[in-house]
Length: 102
Image: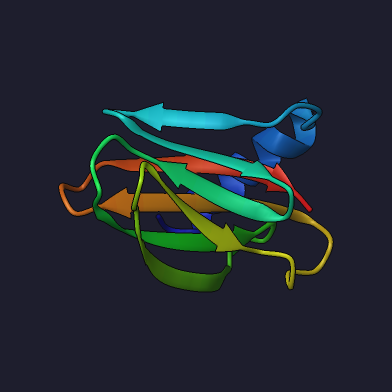
């Protein structure tokens, strides 16, 4: 995801607002924000790369995780208050982006 793409997603978020958890889904890969963590779900136990972008579209965190038992949890409690986009990509190249407000 480029900084421009992350900025466009953020602009849509600011316009639309976020009141309910946003669930992104593609080819069985899902991402949701809740309880100060990004949860990536899949029926496959796969490694995923999770990139977190701030409202300016800058990459603020990137981490790898392995989905076990259908989910992987990424702690984002250390992030400052604000708007973010979490982009998750699995080994097969499927990606989902989840907007969230912390």
